[in-house]
Length: 294
Image (cartoon, rainbow, N blue to C red):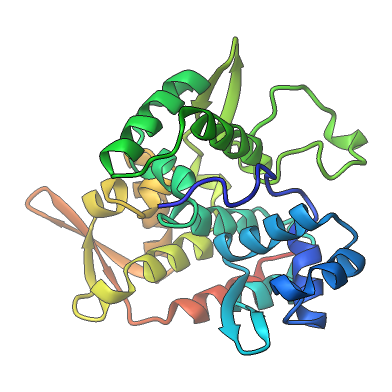
């Protein structure tokens, strides 16, 4: 489990585009022995270069590999789809997919994973989050200071929500609006207090949900084609957790997928589960970007 590998730089609007362009032009751009060239090529400082390297991996647009020449980054399949179809990350489906990767990244982005998969408070403050997360880290054998934990909260918060009002039609600075703010997963409710928001079914593209279910459960589905709804709703790194879905919203989305011929909903003596057809999640991802991203 790790925190503060981003150097307190939260991900900015425009960074995924810059990362994709930079890695496409030079896969070694984020190698530590290439920092000065990266500063010149991307136009940010050395500390921000390190932060961009971190964010590129935890949001799932690059894979990192060490080779004799240094550290090389390659675009993931998602990174390739974004580069081709949504290079400025303007589609909410893209933001859901990047959020999904971040909130499932237990080891590299522990605070984000913990917020959505372990922390059950729907309304919280910086203090209440930091207290609980600090105790969790201590119980896990980690030795981070309380001050470091509080800084991690600030970075996490700035990924999703601003405490300052802004007019989206007048935005000129990429730092003004938090990168994942369009999802409205966290809202500032005043007096230093934040609330998790449960999204409506209409906010989540069906192909994105379908992809997530298939990808999240790939090992399970290699042996069995059924998943019960309680697993999807309540278990670690499942859509119900990291999308903060209510039972009724999850059921509505699954019914829509059933109507689209993607799965079958089964009610067996009060126990509900889904039967998934044999589909490759990558094919579903490609279908989404070919057809739905505008």
